[in-house]
Length: 448
Image (cartoon, rainbow, N blue to C red):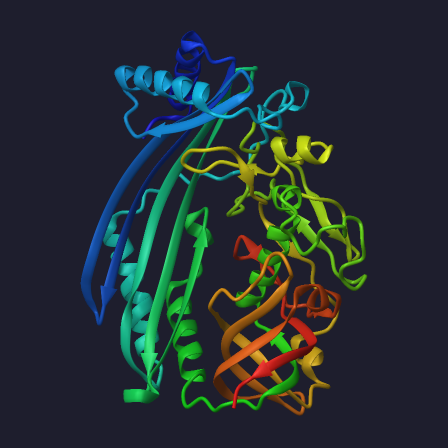
C-alpha cells in the first residue's frame, strides 16, 4: 500500500498521461487497504486472514463526454494503457452536459482539517486471537447459550487520495479495529441466534471483548421461544441498532441524483416540515475519530457540519456536482468515490438528536405494540415511500417490554412514518449512523 504522498504522486502522473492523450479534464483517485482478521469458534482457531488491495481510478472528459476506468496495477506501463483506454472510451461516449469536475472556486483551499483517524498501535494476530477468544468465552458462559457461530477480531488501515486536473490534490489515511461475536441458544427448531459487534478508529476505543460477547448472548437468550403477534394497526418501536435503517431510506430520497431522476418520494418536498419539530438530523464529517469522517469529499470539495433535518424541516438535497448542475444548485460536499466510476452522494457521520424521554417513558402509554430488534428483507419503495419489512423483536404490553415475537411484518409509508416519529434520550455514538430508540404510531403489523 502506498503512502499518502506516493498515492497523490501516482494519481497526478495518471492525470498528466490522460491530458497528453487528449483529455480536456479529469480526476484520479487511489484506494489502498490492508487488514488482518482472526476468527475462533468453540474455543478453537478457525481462520486467520490477511488481505491487501489497492486500486487507482481515472475519470476523463473529452468534448463534453466522459469515461471512467480503474486498475489494480500502478506501474508506468499500466498507467499509460489506462489513460489511453479512458480517452478512447470518452470519445465514443455520448455528451452529458451535466458531467464535469467540481467548480474550481469551490475546491478545498489550504490545509485539510486533521481528524485523528489513524492509530499507530500495532496489533499482532496473537492479540486479535485473544480478543476473539475472550468475546466468545464470555458469550458461551451465559446460561441458555448452546452453540456458537464464532467470534472475530480485526485490524485494518486504508489510504484515500484524490487529484484533479484543475488544481486539487489531497489524501488521508484511516485505521479501524473491530470485535464481533455470534452465538446460538435453544435446541432444534426452537434455536435462535443473535450477535454483537463494535468498530472503532482507535484500538483503545473498543469496548472490552467480554462486553461484546455478553451482549451477543443476552440478545440471543432474549429471543428464545418467540410467540406470534396479532395483525392490525400498532405502535412500533425501533431499537437503536435497527432504527438507523430508517435514516438510510431518508438519505436515499434526499440524494440530488434521485431528485434529478424524479425517483424519490420526497420530490417536491424541499424545505417542507417532514418530521415533528423535535427532530434534528446532523451530518458531522469532522468528528474526531469518526467512523465516516473525512476532510474533503470525493470531488475535492470541503466538508462541513450540516443539519440535514432542522427542527423537523428538510434543509435541502445532498448533491454532487453533476446533480447540482442538473437541479440548478451548488454541490454540498457529499460526493463519495468507490473503486471507479463517477462520484455518488455519500453522507458522513449521521446523528439523530435525542429527545427528552427515557425509552421506558417513551413506551409507557403503549397498551399493545411491538419493539423491533431485527429487520429482514428489502421491501422499501424509494419512489413511493411504501415500507414493508419482515421483523422480529419483543412485544410491548401495558407499557412494558414483554416476551419475544417473530415472523411478523411492519408496514407503512415513510412520509407518514417520518411525520409521526418520536425519539428517546438514549443516543450512543458507536456507528456511522447513530439514532436513539424510535417510536412510530399508526403502523400496520401483520402476524397471525
